[in-house]
Image (cartoon, rainbow, N blue to C red; front, side):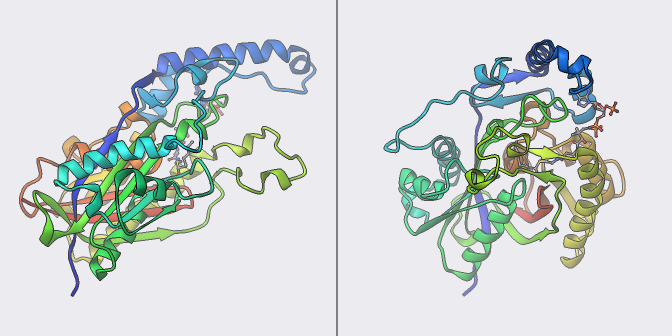
Length: 375
Ligand code: CO8
């Protein structure tokens, strides 16, 4: 017997600390001035290039981002440090990703009227894991009192939608009863805050999505009509950190490519058409006219990127309520972005309304989830 999988709960964990663009730019410029002073001789000799100041106007115009939430603000804004200062935990206490993810998951469970022991699949889907093993998902399983099994997966910004596809397929097939897809994203840990081309892009958050058979939903639900995932290799978004780090000739050096790197212009140009075609292809396969979509919950990387994609899908500029953005408040939170938008802007949809969640990013990867609202 096949089941129709449905989203019955979502949750968002939002860190307490925010960094405004003004605070970010002030810290970066202090760092740049300091670096330029320290390297004045090499800059004068033409061996190094002086670092230019960042600007609030550029950040808002290029991205639409106004602030971001972070797990630690002091380390990031310290011009002598420029990365988060996180409390070191013993192996006996829950990891930081588990703590953030469990908070989001408890909110998703509460919304669905479920408890941890009723869940028998936990997927921790995120763009980086705080350790190699044991899987963060298994620690989340323990923390939430879930049964069954759990595993980690990483498809960068598309981790949430790819995780939803995996969970929905297992529910459809009957191999699991109920699944939590959890996305703890500590982007501040792998962002290079000393690079003005990208220092404004990311923020921290965790999201969770509960999926169960539609027939068992206790309240309003979004049936997952279908999912569509696609990947095509690109080096334009890359992070070379990994377990072979110490085997490289330069050992554990603090190399720039051990953090997030991207060719932002190329990403913009290549990913926008790819996503537009992906969504239109998904809708065509389902025989759905794009105008029938009540809402698009897009990945939250860049406001103009989303405007272009919305125009391509609908054939006209989307109304603000058709395609809500949260990136002005959260910045890019990698895989969590489209789920934050879905979680905050989906309650008002009516019986039978259709919407589409879509993420895209490194890989390249694109994932879309077509959902239908039922009371
Ligand atoms: N302040 C002032 N000027 C600046 C700044 C700044 N902060 N930064 C750059 N400039 C300057 C540049 O030097 C450049 O100057 P010039 O013209 O003299 O060379 C000029 O401004 C224009 O720079 P860009 O061409 O870079 O500016 P864009 O208009 O292209 O905007 C963006 C840059 C916002 C990055 C844009 O290209 C963009 O959003 N691209 C898409 C990015 C994207 O979606 N990436 C997805 C990556 S996320 C993902 O897949 C998940 C990865 C895992 C998570 C990682 C967590 C850390």
